[in-house]
Amino acid sequence: MRRPSPGLTDRLARRPLRAIGSALAAALVALSLGAVGTVAHADNRDDLVRERERNAAEREKVESSLEGVDADLAETYLKLEDAKAQLPVAQQKLAAAEEALAAAERKQEQVAGRLELAEAESASLEADIAAGEEQIDSTRAAMGELARSTYRGDNAVSTLEVVLDSASTDDFLQSYAVMGSAVRSQTQVLDDLETASAVARNQRERQVAVTERIGELKAEADAAVVAADEARAEAAEHKAEIEKIQADMTALSARLEDQKKQYAGQLAELEADSAELAREIARIDEENRRKAEEERRRREAQEAARRAAASRAQQSRPAPAPAAPAPAPASSNFLAPPVPNLYVTSPYGYRVYPITGGWFMHNGVDLRSACGNPQYASAGGTVVGVRGAYGNGTHGNQVLINHGVVGGNSYVTVYNHLSRFAVSQGQPVSQGQTIGYTGATGNVTGCHVHFEVWKNGSTIDPMTLPGF
Image (tube, rainbow, N blue to C red; front, side, top):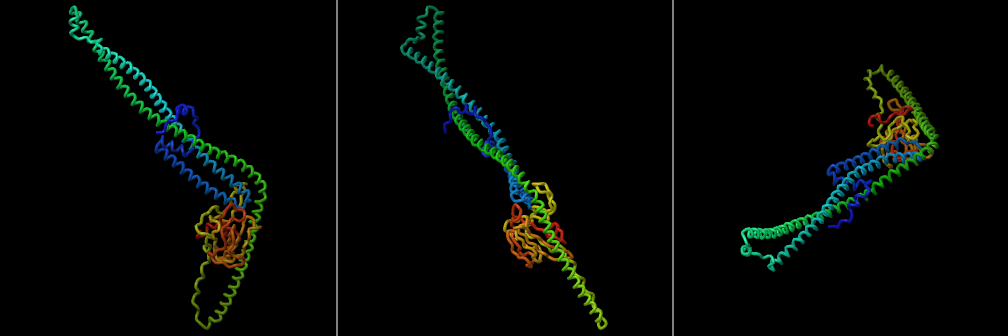
């Protein structure tokens, strides 16, 4: 058994009990609270996991909402948002540590109290044993003197001598009573010695048990002190983490304010880029409609010529059977998603920039896709735009596909932020053909798909189309 450290009771009484870390504190809680502490620790862990998942999902949304923002400004804002998200997690860890600290303090107080009682009992037993040994020594000395006197015959008085030496009956009775009292006194001394010896043996056995218990309690108290010291260091680390996060937030907030002043003109630039794209789509749409009109007139002329020829031949042969009905016009269900497993990170429509609070129209839908994943043509058509990121504003590497007029409507699809291209200007493509690869070019914060559908010169929400 390890020897207990000296004076531990005083150390426990004087030692300040402050912050304690979650890992070692959880062990102390389990000792004092049993299964309840274990369940609470598991609940805290699950809460932290869920909190991290929520933070990751929220960060993805924020990243998508920063599309079109200057990269340095977006990075500063994201760092600030990350710090804000980390702060409650760190505070939750510290709260769990402080909750465990209360249980640890109770545990230390209990150990200190039991140790103090055990040491007091040990001291009392030592005093009792010392007094008992003194009494036994005194009784043994008296017994020894009695034995020596008996051996010398100093106290050897027989009943016959009492009878012969007595002058009268009263004298005999008195002498005999004195002799009986002496014998009883000797017997009592022997009984007292035996009782004192038995008590001393019991006290020594109890002292051995108490001494062993004191050793166990000191070992337990030593372990509690070590655990508390290590846990305080962990709690201090949590506090330092919180202080650093708060300092980072202060610095990032100041930097963000400075960068926001420089960002004032970028929203106008972004709107100009979108307006330029809209004009390009309008030109394509106008060209599609011109070609569609020319095709309609050509077909009408062919139909008129066919009818005239049929009319001339009508007199010489029977009337033809009714023509088959024309096929129904195609609808927007000819478009397919540009990537599989659709997961929207930022929807179509107006949104608020989290930095400036300004409104901006998000003309497409952002879809989750890892860097380098292929993107596919939504439908067959002709590539009418392959634009590099340089000088292309927020769009980055961009592909435009003209699908022509389908069902009386003109369609163009747009794919932004590609890492590289797989098609060239003027190339015909078929549905599902790879046109490029997911990237993060332009003013974006991460790899994703930005997909737009233009119908008759205006954007529509791709997620409302069949198949999306």
